[in-house]
Amino acid sequence: MASPTVSFEHSYAHELPGLYTPWQGQQWPKPQLVLLNERLAQALGLDPAALTSVEGVAMLSGHAMPDTARPLAMAYAGHQFGGFSAQLGDGRAILVGEVIDPQGKRWDLHLKGSGQTPFARGGDGRAVLGPVLREYMISEAMAALGVPTTRALAACTTGERILRQRGLEPGAVLARVAASHLRVGTFQFLAARGDNQLLQRLADYAISRHDPDLTEAPHRYLKLLARVSARQAQTVAHWMGIGFVHGVMNTDNTTISGETIDYGPCAFMERYDPQTCFSSIDHQGRYAYGNQPAIIFWNLARLAETLLPLINTDEDRAIEGALQVIKEAQTFYRAAWLQVFTRKLGLNRPDAALIEEMHQLWQGQGVDFTSFFRALPAALGGDEAPLRALFDDDAAVGDWLAGYRALASNATPELVARNNPVYIPRNQLVEEALQAASFQDDMEPFRRLLALVQAPFTHVDSAEAYARPAPHDAPQIVTYCGT
Ligand code: AMP
Ligand code: MG
Image (cartoon, rainbow, N blue to C red):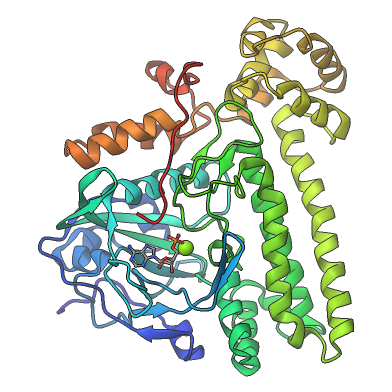
């Protein structure tokens, strides 16, 4: 391609040979831009006009790369639903290169749905528009809600039509940006092969990218484990505070950066129920809302195992150190979780009893999680009716509210309103938006919902329907994986 639209760096390619295969994206019948995240492009120092040019769209869809790109498919392993696969890798994705933003921060530009790679394991290498738009929508909502996450830069269609569960769908590619694509599974890939030398390079690379202050630190690999654990604990605490259910918390979908990644069958819990699970393939509810904290520590333990040979040549001492780090991260998680709800309630300091009683209060009551917090300001001001109306049986609400008021003496209704979203990507609305985009060529419902969830704390008068809980008899949404 003639004019490069973006200049890239390639630290991953330079520093970690053995962890990727150089690979080009597929050429498509008709690559077309569907959405460009202009605000994100600008924050990255990229010129939106260059990205919407023919060359820009070719790059964002994987159709043709500028000379500055050095695309590759990353290798990784991972535990999927508890079972280990020594070789997963980017089966339908490529890393284009790294962008340095105006602040000097490094970001991966990664394409998902860019065609089969040597890691495709029989998969078709494709993505279709519905799931690409789901990732776009949910990751934008997460970013706006303050949750560490990969970001959607663009969505393109390819001109192909691909057969999936719901019929023929437009082929699509998501261009996404991440602080890195290092996963727990990346470490597992090398540990499974016993390649301790490359494993150490990977750990040093992770440190240079995410924890450069540890570069010269004593016990740096143990400290890396502590940092990753703290970031992941914080991220999952955020999830719990907004009702997010990731759906596929496999170790290959758990990042070193702490960013939420690989939005597949993810969705937001509406009626509170810790068993909430949307994924069509998660029959045991392994990745249900209430299991997410336990699972993240299971995944971090898998990371710890890979790091043992770097932590200490004496395995017993390495294990002892790693166990201590994980234990501390669990304590940190508990504090982070309490802090998330402390903030939502507008309290000055955490009150574990009040927060736990609130969760008990919701149990079996069909309470819309997001609406509960939106009804709190009125309740604080004396109007309890909207809050009580959310419960099947509101008998216990009064006692809890009395306790809350006593502790929240300096919480104003405005403060509580500010700390709780009006708009989340509600399941029925997301479904309708994706249906319209995929099967009626109509992006309007998607754009409307996207605009709301990108400013989730801002009430919009004309958007009342978007804040409303699903009707009580609404069927549970089922979401699909890797489609
Ligand atoms: P995911 O569940 O999307 O995180 O994907 C798990 C693994 O399956 C990763 O290695 C993906 O690259 C791979 N994968 C998922 N869907 C496809 C597909 N359609 N073609 C090739 N590989 C895929
Ligand atoms: Mg994945």
